[in-house]
Amino acid sequence: MKKIFLSSDHAGYKLKESIKLLLGKKKIKYIDLGPFNTDRVDYPDYAHKVAKKVKINNNHVGILVCGSGIGMNITANRHKNIRAAQCFNVKSAKLSRLHNDANIITLGSRLLTKNNALKCISVFLKTKFEGGRHTKRIKKI
Image (cartoon, rainbow, N blue to C red; front, side):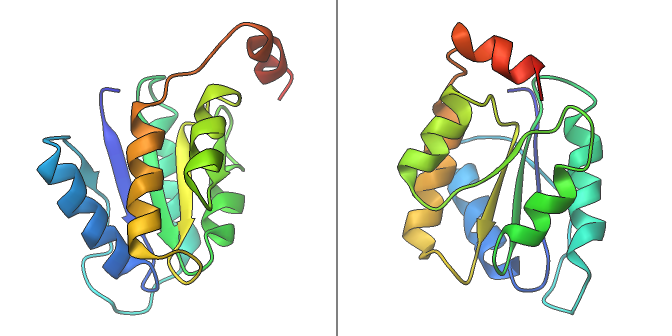
């Protein structure tokens, strides 16, 4: 993965900051596309920013956080060649990469514990697409 683009809305800001600490500890480079405080913002603005960056190159991935993860997910998936997966646990994060070649993970800060969210991020980033029978399916999306 060449670049990781990270963003949130106001509800996901604190979790986004925790994710940045995790990435820093693992020496994983990322680009934070905002916001940079807890002032109220509209999640679609930030989901679009990440999706546009990720779709430029197959090796880019994104991390989006809002209160539920749903709004970010819906918005990101409006972009061609984006496969955003809303993940709730390690298994969903792993399968999103293995079977769906997801290139953006979306998380709900109000639905996940910080620890669970960080585990999802770790698994998402280290899991590779399985290919094989799944490639045909991805092409149908």
